[in-house]
Each structure stands twice: as C-alpha cells, then as structure tokens.
Image (cartoon, rainbow, N blue to C red; front, top):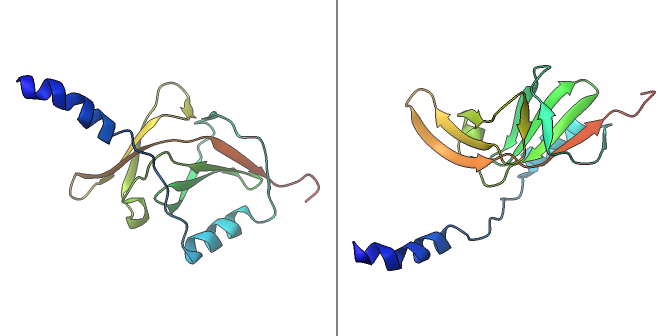
Length: 134
C-alpha cells in the first residue's frame, strides 16, 4: 500500500504531458476548405446552443464542424484526440444545460461492439459566417 503513495505523483506526471494534434491529411484539409468556402471566421466563443439542432461533420479525430445553417458553421478543435471518429464511431458528449461548451468531456464508442475508442474534450468554437450580401 505504501508503494502507491510514492508512485501517485509519478502516475499523475505521466498524464500532464502536452498534446500535439495530428496534422490534417490532404483529403481532410480539402474537405475542411470545401465546408468553409466563402465563409469568414469570427471571434471564438466558449459555448454554443444545442438548439437549433446542429449537424455534426467529422473532419478528423480532433476537428469537428457544427453546421447551424447554410450561413453559419462552427469549427471545433478538440482538446485531445477522439480516436475512432474518422472510422464512424459515435461521439458521446457529457455536458450540462442547453449548451455545448469548451471543456465538455467527450468519449467515442463503437456502438456495435460497445467498446470505447477515445476520450477528449470540446475546444473553443470558431464561427464561420457567409458575409452579408452573398
């Protein structure tokens, strides 16, 4: 039992390493460019409303798009990597209230096998809007 006392700081130190997201592949970058074409980025925000229902597009295991309308799309760069998203696993967000917010814990799971495939958190939401008159 005493061994765990001196090992606890070492175990915690192993969890505090920095995370570097994988760069997008050429195909993923092209999909992102296409989805955001003609839109202008705005100031990032920590939360977005769940309603109206948003349409989720997975770009990579750490980049998501939430389409609110034809004129508004939010880009979210996840904190960590939810492995399995690009393979079609389901994203399960644990949030409270009527908003999705930075830091909301997310896991991914294969619904056929019931296995969890990844864990991450939502990052800031960057709005991309179609400029007025277009």
